[in-house]
Image: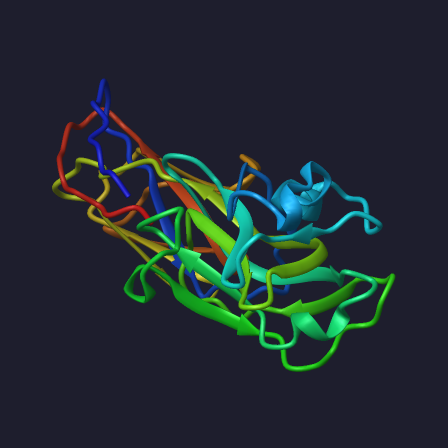
Length: 244
């Protein structure tokens, strides 16, 4: 993920942090992006390419030309998802071929060509039912730009859906004095100028906490998940904060 620096006209901090993330309490968003997958299809049938597994129609399916194949999304530059669950439907005539299929995540390559370029997030161990969605929980601890379903049976998947918490990178933030840290259900702001204002947002832009700074250390109770902290005041300061 590329980093960048944001200029300051007044003292302000935006820091995206983990605050004891848990899947519960955070709305699951169906992930979309640029469709990616193994090119072609068995018999060069245009109706069974990888896009058929992402069209919302469980009667269509992806039947790849090669055994090792995948289908998924590229979320785009600066975006990533912390996966929390998936839903999938097998090709009606070949449900057994999804056994052993895996969910992969990568921040390196959309081709998933080398094993050191991706993480295995989930493996399907049971044959899924035909004609209905099967849902599985994903216990991911890292966010990824590229996500996919992969197997060694030419995919043969009718539909695959990804759900999770999508974030957009803000970049490295410059401030020297103010320290912003996350804990269990709380955010701590230290060394902010008295009289400045701390505003905390969730990833939808909703304000979840706001208050004036009256001491050198301020603590804010917030829901678990990713949040954005903004400190507004008159004093200029610089410090780099890594944003995931």
